[in-house]
Image 1: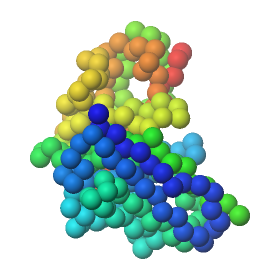
Image 2: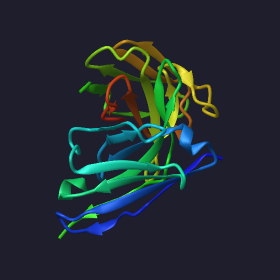
Image 3: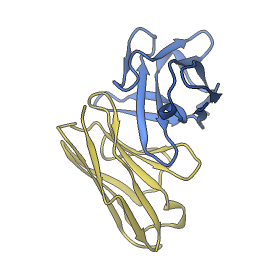
Length: 121
Length: 106
């Protein structure tokens, strides 16, 4: 079955960097784009970034543009999210979610289980 | 950015109740509107995509309608496993989510 597994979360100090990974399996990884979405404790969902199936196009939310970088390695079935200049408000569970393009609409399915990033001194 | 609103923000209902959640976009998103269900400590799961298409495996008591700026998620007969938070999402422009509607037990 289609599965996404995130890793790389942890506790980091303000100003530091961290790289999250999302490994996909059970589908043609190179044929689909991928999104990253985060959820701060007790809050709603915030879309962060998307990368196209071939890695050639990337788009970011204004809130993370210039600090976060998304990349894709189709040879390893992994999408990365590089987080830099981390702030306390970046504390959240980070999810990856496959980007599905149905022509007349697009949606996220499935989602990984999430990885927790805590930014604290 | 396109802003999404949902109402109500929370509701209490009983098993068997009909539940309706509305979602409004700040501008036209055509049919680029999806609904997700999230249970505590779990990742969101897709319920409905393209405003009204039920994801495979989702019970038929769930339905979606609308287009443009106004959308509705309906649960025809609430079941115990449906107590959760529901989010709408637009994908017409950079994706944005609604703030969520928490459905709990009356």
